[in-house]
Structure formats: C-alpha cells, structure tokens
Image (cartoon, rainbow, N blue to C red):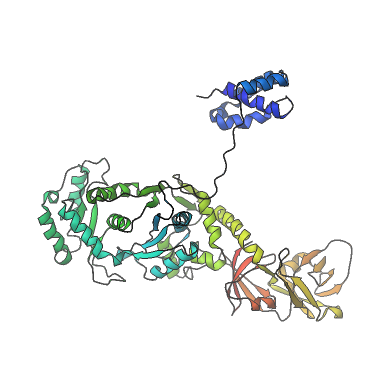
Length: 553
C-alpha cells in the first residue's frame, strides 16, 4: 500500500524544484486526494501531513532538494492521455473483422440503437472489416412491416453507408431447421411436451423432465410433428445444458416453438420458429462473425449459446459485453412511441419532438455528430445514466462545429410588427448582407420598402429606444421610423421588407414559430441547413409552404 508521507514528500520536492526551492502546500492537496481518496473523510489530518512535509522541504537548500530527487529517482507522473477513437479489439486482424448490428423490426431506429450500431460500424471501418445489418424478425407478433426499410435507411444514414450486407432472419429458416436436426441427431436437443408450469418446477429443482431422456429417433419424430400435428403451445425444442447449472435460465433453454401468427414477409409458410438465442448463434457462426458487441445483460444468453458452439464444434468469436446507456427525461421506447403516433400525439416517426434517428436527420443533425459522442463513450462495461437534455447539449455542440461553416445566415422575424420608414431615401434601397460572418459564402441583397417588419419581441422590448436596422439605418424605434444618428452604440435588429414570404419553424418542444423570412429563403433547396440569425440553425423541410425544422442554437 502506498505511503502517504512518502508520496507527500515526493510531490513537495517536485513542486519546490519548479518554484525556486519553495513548495506550495496548496499544490499538494488535490494530487494527494486523487491518490488517497480515503483522506477526504479526514482533511485536517492530511493537511497536517502536507504542512509538516512542506516545512521540512522548504528548510532544505535547492542543492539538497535536487540531490534527494535524483537519488530517489523521483519523477512527475505522466498525465494519462485522453483516448481518441475506439480502443483496439482483442485478436482483431485488419481486413478480417466481421461484426453485426441486430435490431428487431418493431419500428425504426432511435437514439438508444445508435450506440451499438455506431460501435460496430466504426470498428469495421477501423479494421477495414465487414459490417452486417441483421434484422431479427422470427417473432411475428412484434413486427412493424415498414420497419424493414426504415431500419436499413436509418442505419445507412447514421453509419455513413458502412453497411456491407443486410440479412433478414426469416429468409434463413431452412438453415435453422438443418442446424436443429443436426443437434437432435447428436442427442444435444430434445422436443419437450411437458406442461410449462410442471417443467419450471422440475428445472427449478434441478431435475430433468421425462422428455429429456428420449432417443434422438423419437425426438426427430416429434420434431416432424411440430410442423403439422402439434398445436401452438404443445411442444418446444430445448437445448440440453447442465441441468444442475447454478443459473436456472441456462438449464435446458428453449430454442424453437410453434407460432401460428401471420408473418408479414413469409405469411403462413412457416409455423415452427427459432427463438432469439438459437437464431443468433446459428447466424453468428454461419456469417463468420469475429467480434460480437452486446449488452452485459446478455451475458446469460452468451452462456446459453456456448452450448451450441461446443456441441457443433464451432469456432467461438470474441464477445464484448457492454453497459447500457439509460436516458432520463424522456422514455425512449419504440412500442410507446408507436402508440403515441396512432393516438395522434406524434405525427410520425420523424416528428421533431422525439429522439428517433429519422427525426434527428429531419432537424439537421449530422451523422458525424452522433457518431462522435458514442465513439468517445466507447465500449465500457459500466452502465451510464444520462440526462437526455445534457446528452443533446453535447450532440448540438458537435453538430454546430460541423454545420456552422457551411450554413448561410438569413433573417427571420417572428410575429411580425409593421414599421413605416419615414425617410424617402430608404424606400427601395438595396443593402448587401454577408451570408456568413467569417466564411466566404457570398452576399445577398435585400431591398427595403416603405413598410418593413421586425419581430414583435424586438418592437415591444425596444420601442422608443435608439436602434439600428441591420445594414439599413439608425433611429428611434416607433411605428413610424425616423432616421437619426447618435454616438451611443445601438441595439441591432433584423428586418424584412413587405413582400417577404411567410415561414414556419417546427420546434422540438412541440411549439411553432410563425413569422416572415427574407425572400432568399425561397431559393433554398429542401434539406438545406441555414441559420436564422438570433433564432438558430434550421433545416428546410418544405418549400411550399415554407417550413423549417429547428436543430439548435
């Protein structure tokens, strides 16, 4: 165990060396608390150690201090460098890495899906590997038909098109059947027709059910019956494991069941469906996965799947189990969002009020900004609780860094208040306004009219005060505006002429900003991102009527 007195002396010597032979006791406290956190409960004792040590060191000559530093080989600890990018993968070979992201088609992707998707795609990019999007659709009761297309669109957009192939599990049923028959022939799986409650009691007591002792020939007969004779709930296929295993969830886990639900893609073609653990294990092996990232809540599932790897002598991939990111301040739930859409509380999966990927895209967020925050987070084993407002503050900062240099500036006046220009020389005057304060994005022209508009907020707050109409003139703000110049620095407000188009900005809190935008807005292309000065960055959603989605300040 490190000696705090020895460490205090080392730090005092190093501090004295930097500052002419005199150590500062205040400089030691933070470093010692970081190395000896238990002393937070007894600061007075620690302070006494520091004071006594510094007094002793400062009584020495600089030559004596230097001699002790050299003889004791005392060195300043190097600060731990902040990691950039993702940490390296164990046993990863460039050009050979194969990874996957596997969502279920219950709806499009949301911000919670982004974490594992980005980790997988970035590792594949890092190692020049193959990235597979695999859609888990073996449970027909939880499928939203449009999700197949939406998930692929979301994944391609978010990863910068780093999706090398798309696999749909319902296309692979024959492979699952073939693999199960191989396990039955090896006597590594059996068809169980026990009452579920009876089976649970047996398994909880670490006792096998009668079906477990059936021969492989009898199990093959039962297997064939599942396709035509047994009814839903009559039989399940189980993988043989350690019946005495300490975790009941691992004991003889279910691999197939009968499900008569109409499947959106395969209709009534199949009635015997694999459960998640079986399909995942088969696909991971068949697709030659080298590294698998999954939540640490799936550790038990990994343990279940290892029985299949052992029985079939498959090569095992590297498993990386990571912690969850739990968002507070908003319930990120596909099922709840679907209900809210059906009830009319949201207008669709791209409603700007919800943290779904297509909604963020619609608002003007860039994939690189979302990628950056999750790359910085990395594949940690620690669960994290994140306030969604703080989370978005970080993404907004990263997004601003990306979009600011290319976003033209435009005027927008909310709830317009009409102003009459008294000075005839200003009527029809054309002013030239820079499209960006720093970047070379050109200029635009705005021609004044006798009547112009400013925001109601500016009018109410600045009425009777000296103001400058941006690039146009200065004077006292009244309904009739008279030009007048004075030396005091005025408040600068934006304005638009009478023929300016109406515009709406959709806000993420569900509100809208209604007002007038300058005519330049009508030349934008749908999807283009601009900054309305004093409002924030917005993305043009529709040209007719002129509608923008607010991104952030």
